[in-house]
Length: 305
Image (tube, rainbow, N blue to C red; front, top):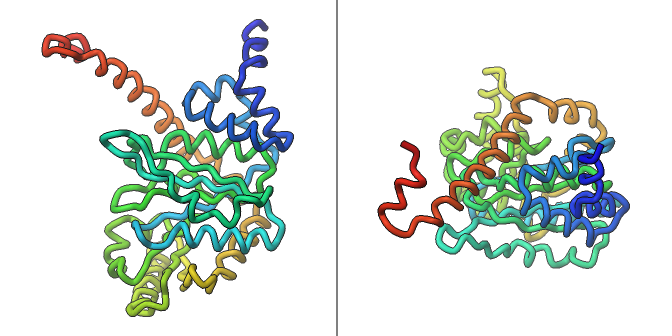
């Protein structure tokens, strides 16, 4: 009983309760507190584990320079035309030297700053190798409580191993450009396995049609192998061309809520979330121990025998 009283009075839970009532300032503070607390945030605000109406999560991933941020900005515009409330989690790479992040994606979303039904949160990777910070898992749970219809998760530019987005998103959109290479590169990166939708952006450039054909052929081969069949769409995000089919996929998914709500409870997804949160906690503990090393003899104190 006393433990429940302590939980009730914690700053995080108060901010979460205000955020649930539509207080966007409280939501921003709650997200910052979750980033600071890590896995402990779930214990201090257990309502994060349950939501009556979770938001649809759309993951946007792809190589650096593919135009992901521009595409997200254009997609926000399409979704707002249907009066949907939209949140964005924009992940930027953290410097391995200073551990800071530029968080520059907000500049590309500037046309939505004054829209009260659009909430944008930038986030550094904090050294994560999977393209998402562990804090992203907690933040997405917070958005589920705040009446958002859609959350767009833009990951850091991926290479050939950053696949964490598949464990948080209900729809995974892989953005490529003609310069990204051929479909073999996509297969090497594992993108064919996680993508629900391929977007060939900057489709006004040479080589776009060839890449589309190769992706469509690869999708057909995946279907014959019993894997998911990814749709391929061409866009020119800077001109707003080709966004309607993407927005329509989002609307269709919103009408099939029971499907992706069930998928979220899959053990594999929950285990990956637990793995990310625990790894973050352990890495912070190890980091604190390492910071105590000043001379060679101190290594004996931090390295187990």
